[in-house]
Amino acid sequence: MKIVVSLQIEPPRKGIDANELTDFAEAAVRAIKGARSSSGTGIGILITRSAELQRLNRRFRRKNKPTDVLSFPAAAIDHGKNYPFVHLGDIAISADIAADNASRLGHSIQDEVKILILHGVLHLSGHDHASDKGQMAALETKLRRKFELPASLIERAGPGRTSRGRKIG
Image 1 (cartoon, rainbow, N blue to C red):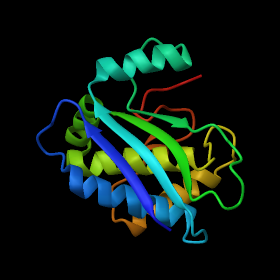
Image 2: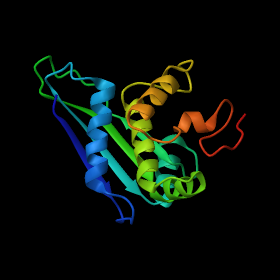
Image 3: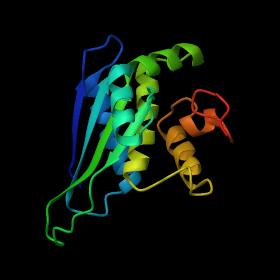
């Protein structure tokens, strides 16, 4: 399966290697989606400032606050079984929040962005930790270990907490 990743870092940020993240995103899609299909798969990734994530969060989720990662699954369109390419969707990541989390948790911003990409790709693939009784969390933990990444968003949050450790509910 051919995987196409369109990655944009706006503005460029020290400590974030676009080539390494593109390779990681391809590996994450392959690990989650498998090589079962001969068709191609694509995702778009935007790494930007918190202000842009707040704008997107307000527009699409009606929450007027920045967040670390947003996933926008592509509309399900049946192009027929011979269609050569499927766009999974797009992911937006706050470089500001990623840098804060990385600093607070003692790992690199590069690893933090990989965690956010993995989380986003899981959502683009149809997983939803809010309603799946732990299946996404288990898969994210398994893949995080495979890719030798620090604790995942879901693991850090724990039951009844946000990814930044704040209590919800």
